[in-house]
Image (cartoon, rainbow, N blue to C red; front, side, top):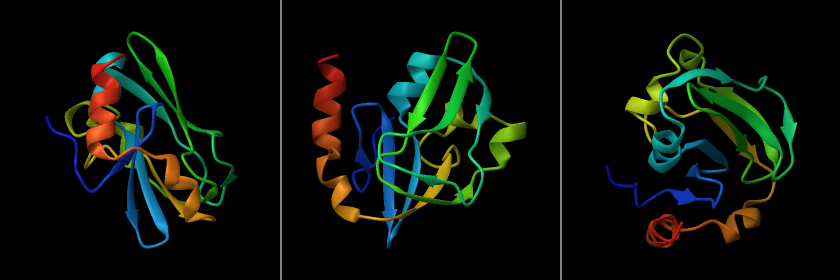
Amino acid sequence: MGYPAEYRYTKAHEWIHLQGNQARIGITQHAQAELGDIVFVELPAVGTAVQKGDNVATVESVKAVGDVFAPVAGTVVDVNADLESAPETINSSPHESGWILVLEIADPSELDDALDVAAYESFIAGE
C-alpha cells in the first residue's frame, strides 16, 4: 500500500490530511502494521482543545498500546465513532476509513515540520 502524496506525516507515524483549516488525522500503514491487529481505540471528546504533541487518542492492539499525538494545536471537531465498534478498520484502511479525528487548526505553521511522502518513506526505510 502506498502513502497518499497529498498527506503530510510525522515521525511518530501519524498522517495529516489538510482540508482548509481542518486536519484529518490517523496512523500510517507502517504504524498499524507494527501494532498488529487493532482491538480498541480511545477517542477524544469533540470540543477538546489540544496542544501540538499532546496525546490525543490511544490505539490498542493485541501486541501493544500506541499513543496518537496531535501534530498541531487545535480543537477536536470530529471523531471517527465507527472505530468504537470496528477498531480493525485502522488495519484494513489506515489512510481512508480508519481516520481517527479531525482538528480545527489553531496555527497552520505548526505543520511546517511535517514530512512529505518522500521524506516519510525515507524515514521509515531507515528505522
